[in-house]
Amino acid sequence: MKNLFSILSVSGLLLALVSVFSFVQPQQGYKPGDAAEDFNLKNIDGNMLSMSNKKYANAKGFIIVFTCNHCPFSKKYEDRIIDLAKKYEPLGFPLIAINPNDPVREPEDSFENMVKLAKEKKYPFPYLWDESQGTAKAYGAQKTPHVYVLKKEGDTRIVAYIGAIDDNSLKAKDAKVKYVENAVDEILAGKAVSNPLTKAVGCTVKWKQ
Image (cartoon, rainbow, N blue to C red; front, side):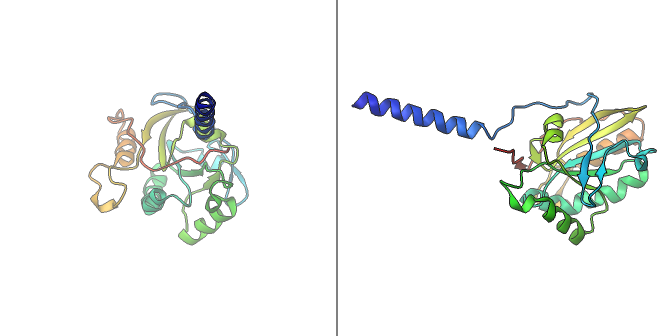
């Protein structure tokens, strides 16, 4: 009888582990220096949008931010993301936000709620829905927010920076190092990005079950 209980306990543990790891995506995606493929995702205006859209014909690069509605970290960074868009789009680096979360697991991150939030906050940038989660997987996004700065070299988009927006997830005024701003400023100055990889801080991406 004791052996039976031991077998049942081990079986239960294995099932629990399988259940947990079914939500965890393997580490994959881009590294600094990789070429990033384009995406074609639904914007909050209902239209599909990609980086090859004619509105971006003169872009020097892109700031891609994986973010969402519900995450406290995303909320803390929301105004900073808006500021990045306003500062760098005129300089040739438009910002595109992408919501990778499964709305079944996080109803607040549904497309309908994305539209509402963008209108309330008057987002000056596209807010795209990665419904299949294929773009997040291709990039290797693990957190919200998780930022990828891309530099255009001809028709190729090279990953120049991956990670956090800055070094303080709580208060913008207390941030001492602004990673994304530094990366874009260095690219605009014709320099190599001095700190191309930092640790993204935020909520985990809510993968489909």
